[in-house]
Length: 386
Image (cartoon, rainbow, N blue to C red):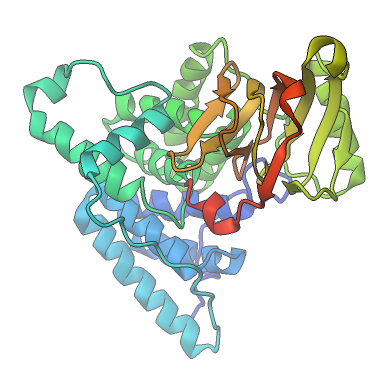
């Protein structure tokens, strides 16, 4: 009997791709599930586990898919996954379960949560009057907010951008859903996916599903990119740096493509988690009562919790990141956003898990006192933003 890995339809498993190997496997799993091709799905599931996806991550992919290709395809995918795991267990393969999903907050208003999640990933407040299908059938709008965005997109284990990869892969593999695919390509870019990520996604679709589906997706992507004149693809090439040479190359690109220098890479700092690049551009606090620095967070990097006695303003100049005030929902921030933090408010900010984020950090009323650092943002706190 062939192993799942041997029967798989291989995609472009390039470690130099913008899209990581794990995410390439998510594309194939999603596409084959949406198409109902269970033989190809068996191979894709084995490849996903071999690439490092956890059992719970793959289960989340298959559960998420029911909202886009229906319960029958989702359930058949889960049954196929159970069979693959039984085969692997019989071969002595012990696959990692990974973290499970967190329980919902007691008494949570699901509609309000869905509005909040949708506003975050879509990039605009959900306050306009109902129109189109939502006005024609208000109950579907309620289901979308309460279930799709609160119950599914609001779950952890997978990030917003991971869930968009699942969604885009499924929609690309299906017929007659071009408006939805176009919409999700835009939302995916709002969550930190770049044009390079999506080009790699379509390369996997081409290898796994077909050239026609991939070309149709590429055509829609070109339209979406053309309609986003104020957006830029973050970090040309977007493969994760693996050494000092790659970091230096990316630093030179940043210096060439942005107004302010990238600065010095800081990897050992009590007030950050992960590498950041810092270039101070205003240091004469005694004269201007202000300090300003250009700060770039590598993917997954962030500040500790902190507060500024005189307040702070963040001008986001590149990429996508998170900002959160203590006790408030996280907000996704992108190039062109301005974050105003009142004096004494505890907060943190940093990059998304997949994308760099650059901002000009301005400490206002600097004479009010130095920054009060309050301890790291834990992995659980950071991942809860997903």
